[in-house]
Amino acid sequence: MPPILLLKTKSSPHDGYDDFFSANDYTPSFIPVLEHRFHTENLAHVRELFASGAFDSNATDNPNGPKYGGMIFTSQRAVEGFAEMIGQHGLPLNPSTNLPLYTVGPATARSLTTLRNKHLPSCSIHGEDTGTGEKLAHHMLQHYNALHPDADPNPSLLFLVGEQRRDIIPKTLMDPSLPDDQRIPVEEIVVYETGEMGSFEGDFRSAVQGSGEGVLWVVVFSPSGCEAMLRVLGLGPFAGNGNGDGGGDGRKVFVATIGPTTRDHLRSKFGFEPHLCAEKPSPEGGWGGDTEVYGGTGAVD
Image (cartoon, rainbow, N blue to C red; front, top):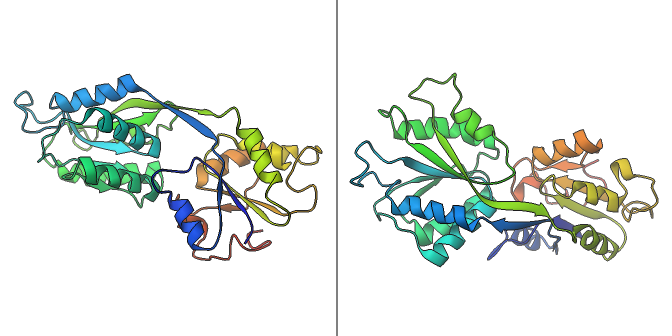
């Protein structure tokens, strides 16, 4: 099988991509692109919200119902930061509190399920099959409003985010064109920062040079690191510059993206068309039901 380089940090304790590729006789290599720093003060504030009864409909200081009716997680980093805060300081919570936890994509849902089972057993998880923030937002408009048919306004949703994020979810849920009783207030709290690792380009170059000859697959998970990736491979605007380690010796290099956001970034900024875009942001999504996709020597041209 051809080597596969996954441009992401390997998730802990289990990584769905590692499990999936290994089960299909591949040995994927993980090249971390991003480093994450948790906002401990903001995470402490989230804990204070739970301690104050802001999520508890039975709290004596909430005569009009809870301030928050649920939470939104669209990244594993947000789940990890929340889990780390709980692990260090605990989470004051009425055991009967049943909060909907909304997520997008199976990988984040798996991390959230582990956290829920350990710390929030009465909560429920929704949206894991939506795949994009826009689809998740429309799912929430139906599901969350059905949970609060008589509320006007709805209790807010707390959205734990990184400092770099798209605003499609808050814009969709708080769209002024929606009826007042259908609009869902969203409060965002930044719980982590993300930056490209200074060592990424060198680490990636070493991995490419050590991957042998023949077919090579590179799977990209976010716009971060795309320029360095193309530069190392000598693809897109860097083709023919003589410095690439990808195709100059005749080897076939294929680039796959986990979802349309990264694909569109490669198209618009670098004029590069990835060979494959996953139908869903999941390990299975890139295969399209065909386990020969990554093994071929041109199946996705």
